[in-house]
Image (cartoon, rainbow, N blue to C red):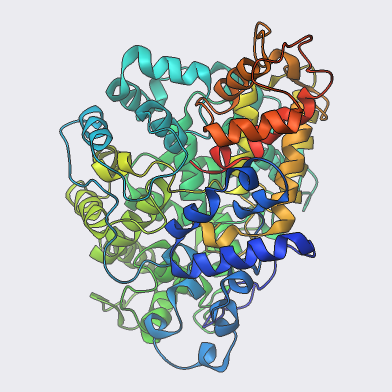
Length: 604
């Protein structure tokens, strides 16, 4: 893997020509995106475009690629590969944030006001206060606090999960989710069991699969998707996804055949709701991370900067953390000696460690001994984990994940202070986030990325494990590859982007729509799919009531009047037209996906 001195992200992840009748819509969307993401809602209120027809590409949260740069029309990726991108300036000044870390998009300037702000005593009280306020960016999504909570802290609401929240209350449900070890997960554990290498150690995997065979890595990708579908520990799975992107080690990759599984189990899952300093320390001794960023090849005589750079730029203080190229070099010096044995295990080799004084930001050490180089690295990692810039970086990314692409500055500061006050523990930060009114006022201000859209679709339909769950999951995993977001599959070290601007693509929007139809029609064998005509339960007597029942099942909220009328027009029916059969004359297989194509499902 080449070093990343001033390089930008790949310019293309998905191709495809834009249909002629989409061009005006996408052009309008691009102009709105340059102004601000909330401006998109004005365009998206054309319900007929959103619910049916190709105009629904206005939602356009599709595959990765050059779309953010092409549609946005700015410097973007082009700037990242220009002469300026290879200059000798400090990393802080080497291009716009959006060039280096997509989740920084539009994060500069004055703090955004969402309509409510402040910290309440409990999440339920924060939800109540936000519900009484007027959101500055209204949109079609229901402001029901239970639905909002489930859209943000799970991979998609289900009727059963909503009933569970209402039964025990918002506060109690959140506390259950923050203690996943005490939360029974029978279906999640059952489906993971069909991918046996997921629970194996590195030594067991090496005895089970052929050398350099990727089957264990694919098992991990498949099991991750299955857990997102069916685990009852949904907030934990959301945080696993968050940290897997923050400390990204792509899966699969050449060096991961025997060790990538241990990174998931011993680094990410072990510490997902624990202390970040422990997670960072574990990652710095994990063979998958060391191979992925070439630290296993770094030697005092030939120092590789990849890991030392990403440790600063991505894992801790962030691109705006104030470090210089000298800091990057010294960061790489400190981490020399950490390598991987031929058996795929971590080992510190003192002879490989660079000695002499080191200085990175405010961290200094005489670093006089090769034998004690590992301890120098551990102290350095603790320094980085507890740095104020790291606190702000992680707080910002959590706010982007759970609140909005451009989160309020005061919220980020509140989360950063909580992180530092609790010794980098993550659960207290999440508790404060969920007690913040900014979280509860932000209904609909996040777009579902393709994978989130796909998983939410399966959850809303009620797809379940079946007679050949392994084959079924493998088929659905291949679908995620087609729309550009397989679980854990982002190749560069910065993880999947978490802002809408990075996911606009007509190609993958169409792929997502096709996946909606495939899931509704149960085209992948091996799983249990509800019959489309069974989605509404007892057959409603009229077409209008049928649409209401389908909206309640798939969207868990009613349709706006114009959207409802658009669907009646699509069916060629009137409000009171009698329903003669549950399949609507064979049209239910085409009707149900339209609900999932709509803005109601595209936002969260």
